[in-house]
Image (cartoon, rainbow, N blue to C red; front, top):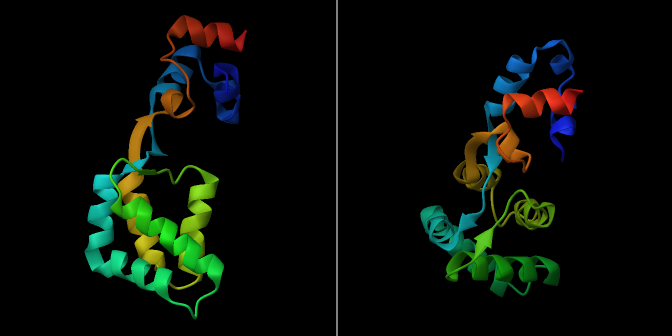
Length: 141
């Protein structure tokens, strides 16, 4: 994303001054950061989540797809040096599959999202370097 695209993503910016747009791009917004193995293990240990994942991975009565996703989740939660990136649609789809199959609850996913949600300046969330006033003027020109 370019700075121009970020500015244009909010139609209200058309009416704002460069200074106001600069303040807007510097405002904090919620972003999803990767959850590392330490946080995932802490999350998995709470409420019996890891045990539920292990049970699902070993349950021959569940469809093979559910068992495979549960097994992958066990590995992600229990291994060192792993990360879960809920901002990645593929990772989110795996969590959603576990919720849909009843292995995890909606509350389990909500707690995971809460752990991964961190404030960051809007420009940073868009993958941009910190803009200055002159950058705003140039992007709007």
